[in-house]
Each structure stands twice: as C-alpha cells, then as structure tokens.
Image 1 (cartoon, rainbow, N blue to C red):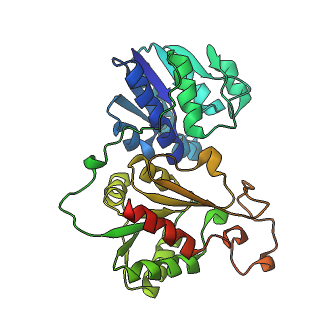
Image 2 (tube, one colour; image 1 turned 60 degrees about the horizontal axis):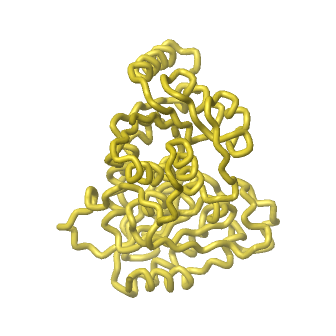
Length: 341
C-alpha cells in the first residue's frame, strides 16, 4: 500500500506526525509513505524508515514572490514530481486550506479531518473521505487517530514511537557529560526569563556538567553569549542544521526546553527533557514520549495562547510574568530525577 502524506510545517507538527507512521507500519507491514513537506524541514521525514520519498515544497518562500518567474517554474516542477506517482490514499495531516489545495493535484483518494475536526473547516470540503477526531486530544493522538481511521486499524494505546533511531545521531566516542538548554523560540511570551537560565546554569555547574547552547538567529546568539559570559560551564554552539542539532541533542544527558520545535525533536530522540510552558498548553501540544516532563505556569490566565502578554508588566519583575512561578530549582530537581533514571 502506498500513501502520500501532506504535512508541510512546522517542525513540531511534522514530528507529531511520525508516531502515526510507526502505528501504520505495525498494522500494515507492507505500507510505504511519500511526504510533502516544506523544504527547510525535508530532512525530518527521511529519518523514519518507512518514508520512501520526500517531496519538498517551498510555500513560505514562494509567497514572498508569488508571481515571479522562478516561483512559477518551481511550482511547475513540484507539480510534475507530484503527478508522477499514484497513491492508494492521500492523507492531509494538516487540516488547512493550503494543504487541502495541494492535495487536489495528487493522484489518490483524498482523506482528512472532517469539518468539525480540521483546523480550517472548509479544508474538509476538498476531501473524498473525512474523519472525526476530538480537538481536545493531544496533537500526536489526533494524528494517530486520523491515520487509524483512514487506514482501517484500531487506534493504538501505546506510548508514541517516533521511529527515529537515536543511535543514528549519537556518537559513542563522545564522552562529554552535558546538558542542552533550548532557550530560543518564536513567541516572546514563550521565553523563559534569561536570569533564570543563568541561575540554572550555576546549579548545573556545581555538578561539574557542561551546558551547550544552540541558536538560530542573532537575538538567540546574543542571549546565549550573555548566559555563557555569566557562567564558566556554558558553551555557545556554532549555527547548526537539523542533522547537526540532532547529533547534539542525541548525546545530551538531559535537555531543558521552552516550547519549541527542537523540544519535540528531543522527545523523538528519547532524550530526557524538561519542557516549560507559559502561554501554551502542553495537554494539546506538549513534547510527548519517554522521559518527558512538563512544567506549566500557575497563573489563572495561562494558557492564553497569545503571542503578546495582556498583563501589565509591573505585576511581576519578570517578563513574561507567567513564568515567575517556574523556578530554576524546580527544573533542577526534575533534572536530578532524570539523571538517576
């Protein structure tokens, strides 16, 4: 059986889809998948053994110059590649109008979430088969449920298995004992306070452990440099691609992460991780898997799911205020638990 998946972005959403492939593989041993995904994340689906072909798409880049000759030529090449294959099923795992639109150009029975379950209800109008999935479930469970219905097997109740082999990235010759702090994220409201990162770094330093800080833009690099300047056991990494980040994460003793795609990659690699949530809801989108711990804001307005904080900043000396109750000592106690497991 050949299935095409449409899940273009973002990093966390793509990783959330991987356990459904593992479920399907166990239920239907002969199944294979092709996958349409944004070019920047094309490497991730290839890490699952049952993905046969990845078809990159560049919607994020194309929409900046939608009518340029280059964009039109690349779109035509994408369509040519897409139409080369015929599939038993095409599954839109995104539930958006853009993903349903892309699906219209594929060859196969079009499947997706029904109008009550999709993120954009009108996407369901473009499917030939649609399925109901509870919106109050975790994103990983929702996609596992969608695949089980579309492919006709019972929904598994096992812990999600991402199908990503940590040994693929782990260097056994590396004897460093280190933690990784995933301090960068897209929303300002999802950032844990910088002074807390520094305090936690000092707690780690007392145990003689190294801390590695990745970064993806100038703001994150500057934050990493300030944390490193405040504590001697901190190493600022060079800018890394996805494979490079996977190598660093796979070798870590533990990881501390804000709500970011790399936190989900850590979960996929089964690395013990403590993830921090202020405005977002870990019940719906938290890092899930083995050895994953969550700390959430205790403020009554959390999770607000907002990129901006509605509270007056003078209510708390910390920005954002919702992280005031998640202390470095709380995280360190969880890291000690993880270290002993």
